[in-house]
Every structure is written in C-alpha cells, then in structure tokens.
Amino acid sequence: MGEKIKVLIEEKKTIEVEKGCIAKDLIEKFYLGKEKVLGVNVDNKSRTLDFELTKDCKLKFLTYESSEGRAVYRKSIKFLLISVIKDMYRNGRLEIHHSLSNGYYFDLHIDIPLNQELLNEIKEKMKEEIKKDKVFERFEVTKSEAIKLFKKEGYPDKVRLLENANIEDVALYKYGRYTDINYGPLVPSTGYLEVFDLLKYQHGFRLCFPDMFNKNTITPMSYHGKLFQIHQESKTWTKILNLTNVSRLNEIINNGELSDYIKINEVFHERKITAISNEILNRRGEARIILIAGPSSSGKTTFSKRLKIHLQVNGLSPVTISLDDYFVNREDNPRDEEGNYDFESIYSLDLNLLNKHMVALLKGEEVNIPRFDFTVGKRHKKSYPMRISDNQIIIIEGIHGLNEELTRDIPAKNKFKIYISPLTQLCIDDYNRISTTDCRLIRRMVRDHQFRSYPAIETLNRWYSVRRGEERNIFPFQESADVMFNSSLFYELPVLKHYAEPLLKDIKRDEKMFVKADSLLKFLSLFKPAGEDIVKEIPPTSLLQEFIGNSSFKY
Image 1: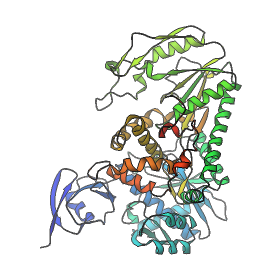
Image 2 (image 1 turned 135 degrees about the horizontal axis):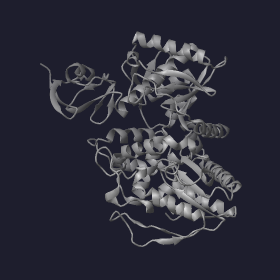
Image 3 (image 1 turned 180 degrees about the vertical axis):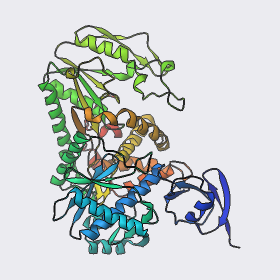
Image 4 (image 1 turned 30 degrees about the vertical axis):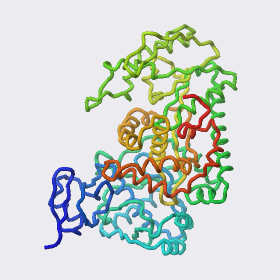
C-alpha cells in the first residue's frame, strides 16, 4: 500500500487517503450536499477538482452556493464565451467592461450589427460545447514562452503585463483557440456550465449568471440606466486618455508620466463636483436637503466636504447633519436574523425625530439636534440648537440617504440625492475585469489600519456583513439618485499597493480569510507601485487621502 495522508473534510470528519489522490475522487464518498461541486478549497486556497493531494490538509467542497464556487463558475462560463466568439468571429474583438445586474457587460466589435439573433447563435454554439463536456486544459510554461505565445496570438496587453511581472513560470488555461493566464481555477469541463444567458443591452450585451439563490434560473435584470451611463462616461474618458488596462498604467509609471495623470484625474473629479454643485444651484430655493449615499469606502465623507466648498463658492451656505446622532438607544436597536444588533438597519435610526427636525428646519424653526455616545450606546442628555436661514441647505451623508423612508415627511422637490461609488473602468486586459468590490475592500483595509489600527484580517472578517448591508440598504435605491458620482481614481491601486501588501502578507495560511488575502495579493502584484515622490503629488483634498491619511480635511 502507498503512503497515506490525512484530510479534514468540511471541518467535520478526518479521513485517510492515498498520497497523490485527486480531490474529485473524494466527492462520491464524502460530499453530502445536493449541489454540483465546482472546485475545492484546500488549506484556504481555491483549487481545481483535479488538484492532487500530497500532504495532510483541510478540504472544503465548493458549490455555487459559496462565493468561491460562484467565482469558479463565472470565470469558466466567461472563458467558454470568449473561446466560442474567437472561433465564430476570428477577426472580431471582444471587450469586457463591468458587472451589470448579476452578469458582465461586454462590447463585441465585428463586421455585422450585434442583435439578439446573433447572440442566440453564439449561445447555441456554447450549448453545443457544453454538451460535448470538453476539458479546460491547464498547463504551465516559462514566462518567456508565455510572452512568445501571446505575441503570436496578438495580445499586446498580456505581453506587457507579463514583461512587468516578477515571475519565472506562468499557469495558463486553454480551450479551443483561446489561451489565457490562469486568474483562478475553472471547472474541469464544459459540462458543468448548464445555466447562463446572453442578452442584448444598449450597444453591447450581458453575459448573465445563474441566480445566487436558485442556480437553475437567471436573475431578472433590474433597471440600471443611470449606473450604466456613468460606467460608459468613465469608459469613454479612459479611452480618450488611452488608459484602459493595467499594462498601460504600468507603462505610464515606467515612463515617469504618472504625475500628469494624477493631475488629470483630480481635475476630472473637480469638474464633476462643480457640475453637481451647479445642478443644486439651479434648484436653489427648492432643493434644501442634499442626501449623499454609497457603499463602504466610496469616499463619501471627503466628497461631501468638497461639495460643501463648491456650494459655498456658488453662494449657498450648507450645514451638515450627522445621521450618527439620530441612532436609537442600543437596547431599542433592531436585531438581525442571528439575534445580533443590526446597526445598518434603517430602523436603527430615530426616523420620527429626524423627520420632525427636518420639517421644522425647512420652516425656519429652531430644533435641538441630539448627540449620540457610542461608548455607552445612548443619546446624550445634552443637545445643540440649530436653525437655518433661507439660503442655507442641509447635507446629510449616510448609507440610507437614498431610501425614501429616511426622509419620508420631506417633499421630493426639497431633496437632492447623490449616489457615490468607485466604479473602476480599468481592466486587467480585454477579457479580464477588475472588481469594484475588491477595490473598495482594499481602500477600507488601508483606511482601517491607518486610522483605527485594525489588522487586515479584521477588515476581511467584517466584509461579508458590510456587503450584506449594502445589498439590502444601498444598491436597491441607487437608481433613485438625481446624480451619480464615480469616485474611482485610475492611479489609486499603484498607490494603495504600498499600504495593502504588507497588511495582507500578515494573514496566516490557517486563517479562513487567507483565500481572499491570497487573491488580493495576486491581484495587486499586477501593478507597478507608485513611488513615494509620486504619492506626495496627490492633492491634500483628493478622495484617496481619506484612505491613506494625508488629507487636509478634518474627519
């Protein structure tokens, strides 16, 4: 008999298996679930089902019910899509852009107009490949061999990316005529990819993924017209600047040109804030309450401070009210389904008092604004008086700003709603996007360490709860905004890399969040770091300073 190793399955049962056995071989005997297994997590690293087990380890089966499993499925169906399009339209060009309603938005550049009939043909070809259940081929080559291959295939962005990479070998995937860098495990074969759709949208199309809670159905698309418009505006801007992917950004850094691009990006932000301020001015006397909302680490606080300055330049006199002061006493706070205090629920706020105060302030009456003491979880006995004049407006910033329930007693005409989020338009290359959520997580991790001395593991552990709150309290209301502001800065990741990498490297292999930390480290390794001399050129009022700690604003 061969050498044995011990495998802890799902943190529940330890088994002995032959050293060198394949992870897939354990499914039939030890997997108790009903969903199809797409991959495995071995010692907190996502692996393919054909991963060879060579030492004692912990193993979890990945299905579509887990975020890791969904990532495997999405990468795989995207890979198949690209392969089929390359086979059907050899002179065509496909570009991935951003996520859109549980899917990815693509542009397809071919000689004939893109319509739903054509997308149905592509879909049928993909289904044919799925029926064949053909294998996604995984192999490794040297860096020089990979560069040679991608030069031959006509992928200059991948070539430049590898030329800057500090690696010796490159893991690749291949299916049909399409070869790409391994950015994470795929399913073993196409037969695993049963549910997807291709739907025409605007001038491109959506690759639609299975519903998160029912993988046999496609999530119906919700309206994202305003959000899509902001994405497209930003994409147009990056194309004008010839800055659409990571390899081009690295080239700019290598050429010593990043300083100029920082100035351009900051002026672009300034121009957008000016435009928003002018919109508010045009509704002078009517729009009296400015509501600013967005997901975590969007730069809401700095944005509100910069907007306040612009409003003052326009002759308005804004005052800020903090929603934090309207929290109910802790014992009155609602709880979530697990019995924990749900501080992100809108009903953690005293909505009756808030609306009473807003109505009174708009009438010119004086109110006593409460103070909340977070150390004891109660409202202070002392409050402070406030009254506003006719030329004053109120700025309220918080996650519930777009929810009508927050200001239910205020007429719509008196409110101006702003949605802010860093909607990055930079891609790794034509076929691989950058996750906006990951960019926000990196921002938050750096800020948590800079201002609260939190280790990265603490930020990562809290992230699921943060995301859950965003899905419930922010994203459903984003399209109700009067305007949207994209707070992404295309130079931010080379800057944040310097702060984030040491924090992520501190996370131990046995930590549950190691798999995410490892993924973020691999992602950041794609970027050339910005030098300290360049960091000093970031303006003190930049939104990025809210995270790295050199802002001239007081927080």
